Length: 142
Image 1 (cartoon, rainbow, N blue to C red):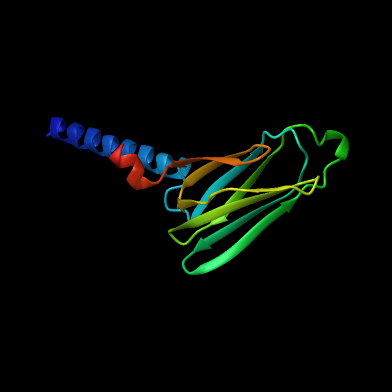
Image 2: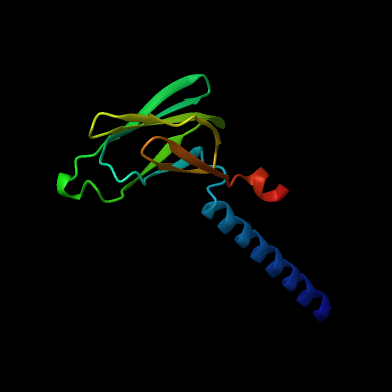
């Protein structure tokens, strides 16, 4: 009887630990959250005047933007901008960067889904994108 009781307690403790580990993984990977994170890094050596992100999801289009109001004395330093993109499951995005000298570069656009993390490196003449999907399906199929 005592042995059976101990086995039941061990089983419950094991299940609770597995549940807790799964919950922590879900929170850290943003599983279930309707967002994607996009980071834009300035690797051009030029000052950025503004960054625009166009999002298309669930039949709607939305534009997020950020203007650089920093001190021009630090304009040559690399800066990064982080955007949290609200999604309805999946969609697409395109990034447009306006430099202080009036030149504009634009990404080719890419697919995004809940939990995606996109890193875009702004060069003088282009934008290079790195996509990593941290969604549930990508994690279990790896």
